[in-house]
Image (cartoon, rainbow, N blue to C red; front, side, top):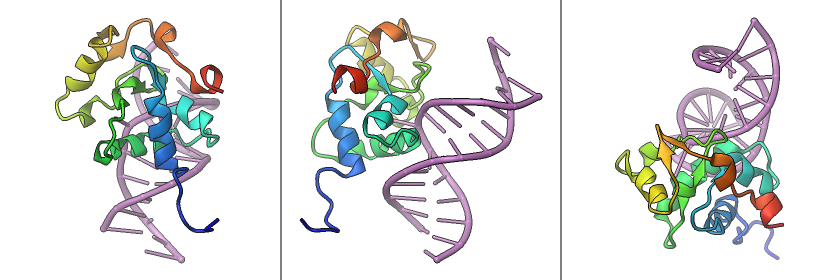
Length: 115
DNA sequence: ATTCTGACAGCAA
DNA sequence: TTTGCTGCCAGAA
């Protein structure tokens, strides 16, 4: 057990892993992911991790992660400002004014759904 | 080592 | 109700 080596349990890797577990047509929040990973208050870092998620080899459905208000706070990081919304609508999620409609129904909490 | 930034969240006015 | 400030964690320069 190499003390310094970084396993697949890096914070970034964990964020990607959980994000990939988000079911099709569902969404979650940065804070929910942070809480599931145990860091609780590192929601900002989750966003930072997703910012680099496109560099990874595997696809990470970062468009399914929004802020706690159901607002598409990261849409500007998807090339075009409409990409994130289109990806969501492609999954049957209705987006109105950069915000997810019926957010509470679409919300998927890894802490309680996954355990 | 120090400082700054960020795709957030919580709380005070 | 909306706006603004603060705390938090991890990484980059």
